[in-house]
Length: 84
Image (tube, rainbow, N blue to C red):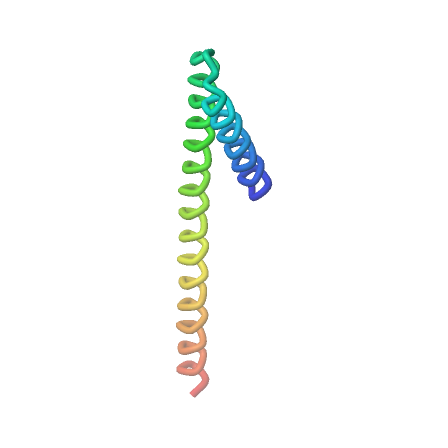
């Protein structure tokens, strides 16, 4: 997933550079610039979606880890209580 993020980010930067170059040269093909900006926005949305998905996955993994730790501590407490 990280490579997908880095590829999308690189493509986003590349499109940004193309747009800046076209605008700086006072390029008259506004349609091309508009299309590039739309592509850039789609990539930005994809990056945002991926980051949200990654954050949710990370949060879920953390919650699972804490539940497992609590379960282990609970089981250890029960084992000590049953040994008497």
